[in-house]
Length: 421
Image 1: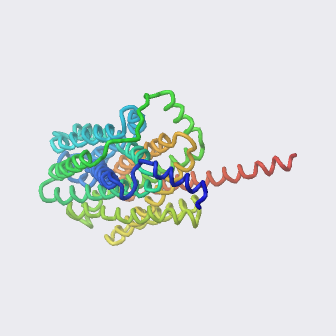
Image 2: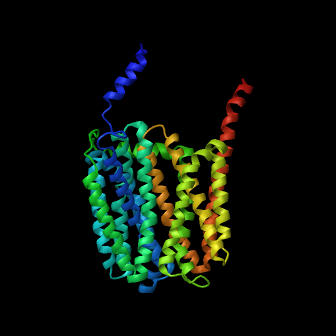
Image 3: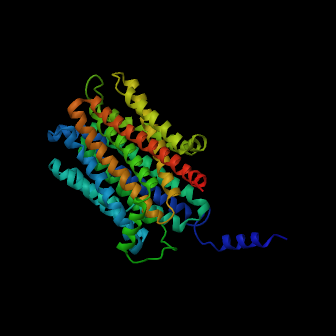
């Protein structure tokens, strides 16, 4: 006869009405959020591969055109936290639907922008709209999917993010080569519209969401608590610095490859973003790296890989530049995976707000990296952009070393107290 604890566990499992693989609604939920993730990142970075063409049409410098990317990521960073709080009142499904609807509507207007200023303004509005989706998606899955199936469901959403970011750049690059950058952006807008329709049609209604009041005091208190935790602050800074490197490199790389000695066409430049597939492998390997090297060891390896890629990309050989991008991408995704997963383990309360703060820092880093990298490119060419990346890498090393020092000091305190007693 099975023990009482086994019976209780079986009873609880059967009483759990949340979704699991094989259950009605689980596949629909996974596919819906995959479509949402694909649309989100295709839209967010839609202008990145087109920056040289945008500069050419408006007579803008790289630093000016880069704001079509930085404005979107910066607005997303600023709006993630307040919109995640609003989802507590109006529901995850409603927030995601509203966010995607507004973002797609703006995407259909973006190709009609008459000048660079209006294009940047529309992109900022688009980024602000998209901010309601990532945190709400994670919360929806946590509430509607059984814990054992949660990792797989989140993994599919993240896969949609990665594929969306890559495919959006590929589509815009090849379409722009044939019909111009406006047609490229229109193609991404129409593709995202189809994703939004699929999302709304597939996503089941929430069955486990309980609305609550928007409590600004509680939100401020949670933010204050997280920002007073030295380890969490270090993780936020590390995420921002890694993304500064990534934002700088991928915002500017098109300008370098369109010029001599490479002189690549727009479609081929868009295809460079296939390197993102390396990031999928690096993210998956991050857990094993942490198991073998520890969190700090994995961060040092990620930093070293990124730095090696930056230095290698200085070569005038296309093969060396591509190899450098592979290393930069692998190092970034590994470092990001280590830092972001450490946030959820470190935060003891209000984990949703802790993750939202990381996302804010992450996208602020992307915005800063894109702008600084473009300014440096305008002033000193690709070497200037690489310098920005190396400074950010040095920042990650400094923060990690400081964390190691703080951990050693904290470990000695009990020993000193015992010796004094």
